[in-house]
Amino acid sequence: MTDGEFSQAELFDVFSNARRRHAVKYLRRGGGTCDLAPLVEQVAAWENGIGTTEVTRTQRRRVYISLYQTHLPMLEDHGIVDWDPDTHTIELLPSADVFEPYLDRRPGYQRPWHRIYAAVTALGVVALALTWLSVGPATTALAPLVAVALCLAVLAVSILQYASRRPTLTLPFGAAGR
Image (cartoon, helix red, strand yellow):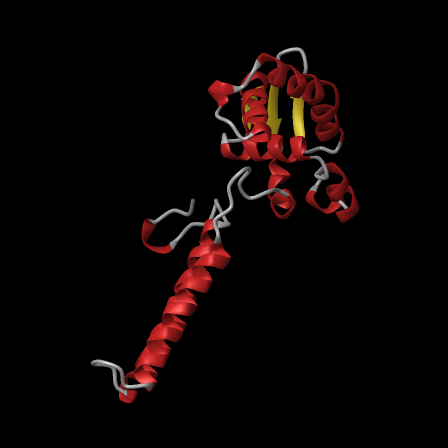
């Protein structure tokens, strides 16, 4: 399939299952190809919120069976991966960028952006209130500077959040995204 052949309904159907999302995410992070064993380990770890060394045989077996029998064949049928059940190799096909909006950003971890925004805003409001009340060295003449600093701080947090959600983002001056 080509990029244009994926309907939104098909993509929602394919990525409605967390194991399929995890499999594609693991392949994207690993350069697009892997063997089945490390994929099984990582998916089981993500599902159970543990490290790969802590995955039990039962957890591994459940993930292995479902990936082998159901999820990898479905991803192959939709042209998302090339899955060889004989050699247990999986290759993510080139159209993988189409799926980015349907994938979880980071299994098991989400930055508390709402708390960061709240903290920056609260500090800014306190600083602005202190300048308006002329408390200590703060005077009302500093209020516009504090307001500009608050706006710049919120802008900086917004940029950081944007960059953190795009792992393949290339930043200027040779810095790489996550």
